[in-house]
Length: 590
Ligand code: G6P
Image (cartoon, rainbow, N blue to C red; front, side, top):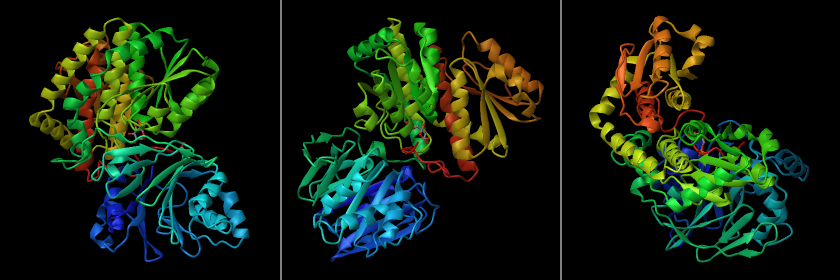
């Protein structure tokens, strides 16, 4: 949610670096963009509505070795040039880019206005440079003034600030991510690693309540509250630049769907000792809860079935945003399993806070190593899917489900059986995702692209996949899509089925197969056009998208053609699947 980027160092093309860095953060927001460059004692700010991807970095080649930039997902104030970041104080000497929400900005703004400050935007962010200006009346030390200002803020933030009178880049973090890239010729500070990965793979993580001050030669991390210096390790990241790029694909979404040829196997490749320890923790816990948001929440829902069917173990799923009222059930011996691609989702972090306040332990299943959730959890399992850039989550979901299924098998003392099943499934996915298959899915998208409504049904672990299918289709193609448990349709939604309404049935060779086929027959009797996603054909299907038979891993396989269908529906309807309207990939606000 909003991407921020800063550079200070020996290079004199900091503005261009900021433009290129922000292009790699566009998945975090793409309403508007802006750059501030400090050059010859002045701060030059350029900003605009629209996408940073359309900006040519050659237009930012003027000599500058200190710059900050922002790509926005609007929260406070509409999408206008005035509301775009960077924001500056009255005399334009201090510029700030910010990710997060300052909850008390209205009070701060009122106080500042009484002191004569004038505001140009509707944002919460604009109070930051004005407040820093106030503190600079008491000190010459820019970093100290930033630290004092932070003491007045309530809410979540990560921001970068620069000042005409100082050659330093100052950054502070409370609740939203910030990572330092240690370059050969300067320092980068950004919301996420892809922003500077082209320049360095050495990183240092800021923790909540910390700030960093760098002049490009030196860097000092300190505690926002006390000002005490904090020593940081340099960590080398393992992702490659190629993994983070689109390569031959037109969109990240398609690339990431195709990445599932290998990513499921990478997720399964876990340290067995660790999996045993975690299974033991679940076995001994007084209550295990599973939370996530959006697509990750659907992995959690599927896992409820995995744990029930494979390990005969009851776990409790709740969307992270609904977890607050579960705190009555939490004990110090309870376990919270959180699932998140980014490791930064605000509602998930909130759920962790609730669990920790009750003394419960937290297990995280995340994709982004070093993310806040990774660092704040008691145990972490990484799914190793590689960078996921498209807003619509695809390979992270299948990786999350693979890890959860492996844990369920371990809990049932069948780790090797689970591993074998998942590795076989991975190789079946590899075979399935061949060019002819993808073209076939595209041809189905071609047939239904004009339809305005679409329904998806599933049972057992295919029920959460029906819900996930609806999310995928809605978010990228804007077609009205709804997922249901097959048996629920006749209790209401079946009234919506008309002649030719596309209905996708997610089927497996399992104990609920006959039931879901009956549900498909009920839909067909009302005119539904049935698209079966199933290992075997059935006479009720008008279209059949064949998937390999994957036993207990069927949900992992069945969702993949729907991801591809959603992708092609978006493209055929002229939408950009990587940057769907109104959405952002990393949701760092509640
Ligand atoms: C956003 C994204 C979704 C994602 C959800 C949870 O809404 O658009 O694709 O599933 O956040 O994100 P997380 O990073 O916690 O998995």
